[in-house]
Image 1 (tube, rainbow, N blue to C red):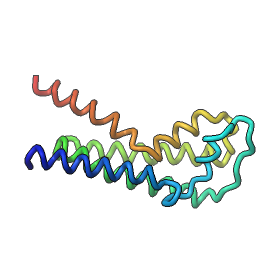
Image 2 (image 1 turned 120 degrees about the vertical axis):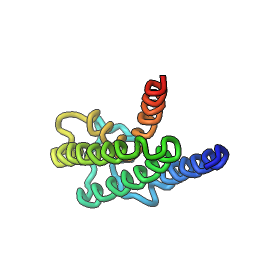
Image 3 (image 1 turned 90 degrees about the horizontal axis):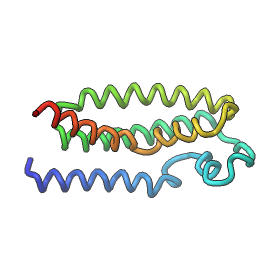
Image 4 (image 1 turned 90 degrees about the vertical axis):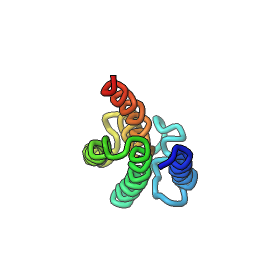
Amino acid sequence: MSKPLKIAFIIFLLGLLFLIRNFETILFYDPLQEYFKNDYLYGEFPDFLVGKLLVSLSLRYFMNTVISLGVLWILFKKRYLVFSVRFYAISFFVLIGMFSALLLNKFQIGYLLPFYIRRFLIHPLFLFLLIPAFFYQKKFRED
């Protein structure tokens, strides 16, 4: 694949990530979004459907993961893809499990941990962590 075509595909995939973020209120059920935007330390914990929220978070994580894996495949081919798939899968189960437990307890241990766990579930943060790590690993292996 030529370099300009790679760049075009990466820009397209990053554009999809931006679209997911732009239309998040339309596409996904997330009553915690307004809760965390406002003064959540003193506000009332919102009523919500736990199952619907977890399905919505899972769908968003899956969509971001598929697009992120596309970016990683274009940048690194198959070399790091297997690791990335395993990393995303393990991360999902750990994060969704922790978030579920915190949700059922209505964040009684505090708000900071659930806030950041939710961030990792709804945003493609792992992509921005893995790209520099893989470039570093690739450079280290070539030297």
